[in-house]
Image (cartoon, rainbow, N blue to C red; front, side, top):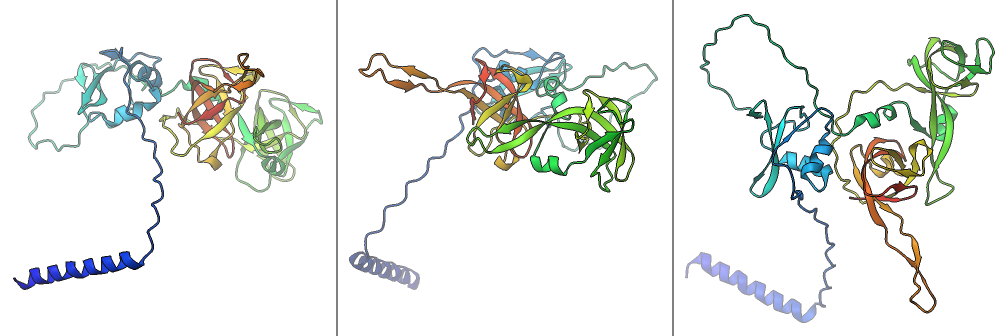
Length: 377
């Protein structure tokens, strides 16, 4: 026997002896802790009646188009990620033709534009180029804008004007002390005197008034923030204490004591990419915009979660109607039974504050109500 095999057998024998010795003296090993089950996301489900070919038209949104192909429209990024043809799949234009295909059992959508399949590649072309004779001529090109991911018309005014503010921010904000003419009510083209402006470079401000409080349904004493009611826009014309501000636009009358917040810049249309939160979410609808008691598709709701809860723009959540109590007349004591909540729709978060967020109702099978539960889809 060679030395290599001899040492190998010797090592195995020694290990076996030590193992037997340990079994004789050592206590039994504790049972392993149970393995926590991890929920695996289901594969994207395709509608059985999906269109063979779909031509994009003006007014379409990616969400709407995806609802023709997918049972869960918000999961379209997963289908696009399987697409080897388009580098930026969120830029789809009217006139494009979408065709669903499969690669190794995974669905993807092919885009045909102008009769040609859209291909984007980084492959280096050959050094030799064909000779092309150029001659002057008039070319007419139709300017097209890419379709939007969601109907931003429904939320555009909420991207800038509405605001949620804390009591601390209100206390520290500059405020209107008086108008030039001393009137209690001011409007457009009036000059206002502002205090607590401090020496900051901002010149454009939004004037707001403290509105209703957003209260955490889980704790009546926990105020998540206050609605900042939009009143007017203004521009600083003279710094100092007090400073002077010219009202450039007014939606409502401005009163003494109204507060100023820095005007947010106009934002271009955002390309929201819907996705599910990685963390578990258990929240509620705490307000429905415009003071209504129910919300349907493309209406806006306020949720009691925000940046502190790691919420992001584009997060999609499912809403559930709160289970009602029914009396079971077929028991001796006619006991009351809490019925389970039923899924009512899908909402997508489009603006996030510290502890509160705005969400757009994307789909609803029944109206959404105040205090309905909102959780992972």
